[in-house]
Image (tube, rainbow, N blue to C red; front, side, top):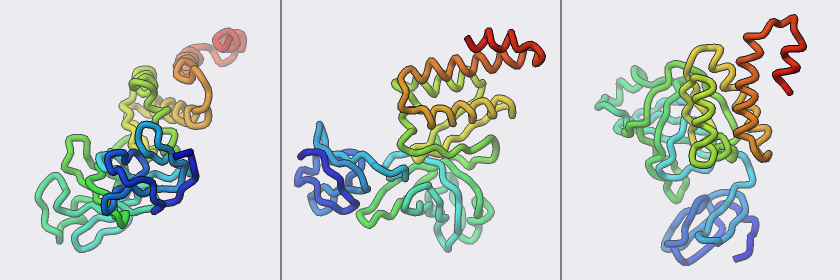
Length: 235
């Protein structure tokens, strides 16, 4: 297969063992799950052309409750598809009539994608040690396609960000980032995330962000009336 543009539902392969990211399997065949560029290098996969999140089973994401039904919380997961969190997937046993006591409209939660059906119903679960209700810190939206850049090779970028900002930073695969720490530290982390998103295409970005964060700390220690000191720090 040469690289080609595909849309959701396009047939890709008869070999289900070759199904990779951005695909789904139905009736023994592999289909495109999203709009993007399909290729079969290694496995059949689709790289998204748009910035919307394409759910995959096992993804840890951050969503916001948009409505509560009889037995499900419906979540905005920054995707063309809604996330469905059944009350049975909450970490503790609760009655459906008490659902709003635990999660209500506007609440944000870290969840895991349990299953993605062929009809694109996204079933979620909080029965994971990484799942939790978010009640503090700040949430930052970035493009889902920039998530690998924020994490970095071998976790290099995210490890550096945590160290230099003194913040705990959790990156959802859907492009929602949860930052916790002191207010001034969170502000620095958010600024760094914005730079990463805007300059994700540049080489040596981890080193550049690290330098910028160090310069910012030194700048705050410098006298504001001393431009010579600031110019020296920026050199």
